[in-house]
Length: 170
Image 1 (cartoon, helix red, strand yellow):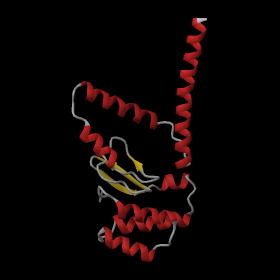
Image 2 (image 1 turned 30 degrees about the horizontal axis):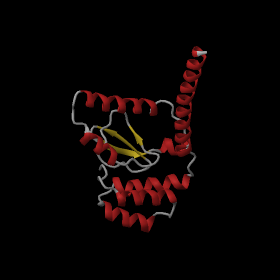
Image 3 (image 1 turned 135 degrees about the vertical axis):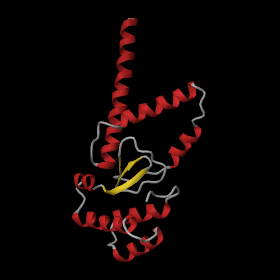
Image 4 (image 1 turned 90 degrees about the vertical axis):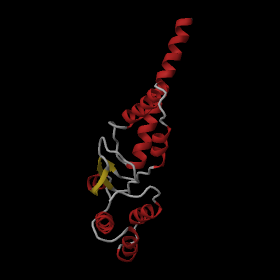
C-alpha cells in the first residue's frame, strides 16, 4: 500500500508539472498567437539558477534583479539572443546587441500573426518617424498622430513611447 501511495503522489506531482508547462504554452499562444517551444522554460530555469547561485555565493544580485523588473518589452517585439536590454523595447520591433539596438520592424512576426497589410504599413511609417528620422521622440510622436491612421497597434506604439520610464534605444 505504501508503494501505491508513493507512486500516486509521484504521478500527481509529474502531472502538475506537465499541467503548469501546458498552461504556460497556452498563455504564450493566447497572447502572441504563435507557439514558441524553445525559449520560455530555458529563460525561466536560467533566471532561477542565476538567482540561487548569486545567493549561494553571497553576491548582491538585487540591483540587477530590480533593473530587470522595471524594463518593459512591448508586444510582438523580437529580442536577439545574448542581448543586454537596459532600456524599454517598443512593441513590434527587432532589438539585438550588447548594448541593445533597434533593427527595424518585426515584419516576420507580424506576418505570422496575420496582421493586416494596412497595419504593417502604418507601423513601418511610425518606426521610420521614431527611429530613422532626425526628429526627437516628442516631435516624432506629434507628427505620427497627425500623419498616421488611428489603428490600435499604432496607438499602442505611440502610448508605449510616451510612457517609457527607462528610455528607448536609438
